Amino acid sequence: MVDAPGLFVSLRFRLFLTFAAFGSLLTLGSLWLARHQAPSAPAVAQPAPWHLMLLLLGVLCASALLAWWLNRWILSPLLNLQKGLRNVQEGQLDLSTQIDRKDELGLLNRQFHEMIESLRAREFLKSTLECYVSRPVAQRIFEQQDALQLGGEEREVTILFADIRRFTALAEALPPTRVVEILNAYFTRVITMVGENEGMVDKLMGDSIMALFGAPLPLEDAPFRAIECALSIQRAVEEINLDQARLGLPPIEMGIGINTGTVVAGNIGSSVRMDYTVIGDNVNVAARLQGLAGPGEIYISQATYEQTSSRLRVSPLEPMILKGRQNPVRIFRVEGLAGEDQPSA
Image (cartoon, rainbow, N blue to C red; front, side, top):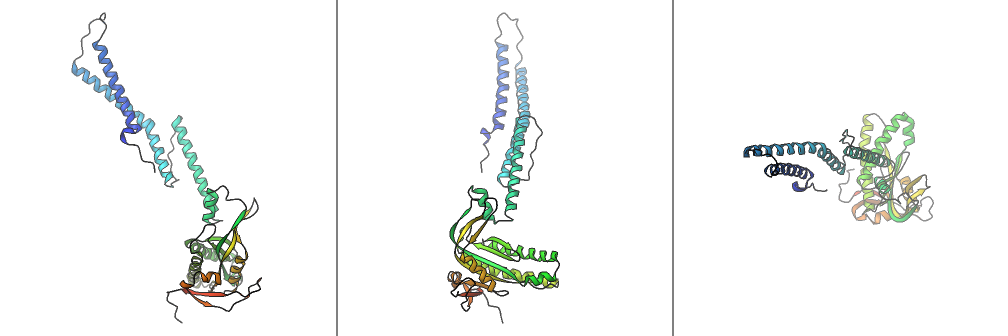
């Protein structure tokens, strides 16, 4: 933040000093002329010293009043603009410093307000964009000119899929508006959990959600963050079911699948419509694990387990052949974090 100018370099002090000096020079000049009149000029009675002091004091007061008036006329709008700029620097865009003037200061004030309106429009566009893509992606679009180019890069990512079980039956038993309310309450909790664990919501697919950990920005300890997120989601679902029970509605049950591996992450689509996502076989593995997980279960792959095994309580399952694969895949069911109290039977 730029520091305010000191007293002796401020425009206010210089303006006052200028008029004080001007008034003093004007008074001294008048006195000099009175004392050094031309010889041909008739003799004029010299003013008494106290008359000169009153004259000097009067000129100085007039200069001070003129400096004060110019200060209000010129400096006050500038100080208001300075305050407005400081507020904008702090992120406050709901301010108003409008002045009705036709001079350059009025033009400067109008341009300042046009700048604020542009910043408001930019913030609205950014917040709207964050409703459709993750905050890191939105930030990258605004800061980097090449962020909207098609293409991708290989990187290791942890992918999480979560899906509500038997949602079709739930939708058939309730009015559509009530189904939307339940979904919104569910997604609000889930999206919050993903954000708190520094993940990115990639897609909302009906009653399913796909989240990424480690893309578009690298994330330290991404596999464990994804598992913590999954456990938080299951706890949030339990809280939602308490509300469901109070309303006499059936509970929500969901399964989660998590896998870690190399994918291609980037903008996929066309120049007029694109989507930041990840593609590759490891995405399919995460989706298949989610399909196998039962209500309330979290299934993780061996790749995810190997990076988090010391901090988890898991139950190894029989190797399974996933759809589209020929070799069996080792799967682990997450029971909780190591050191947590196990639920009583």
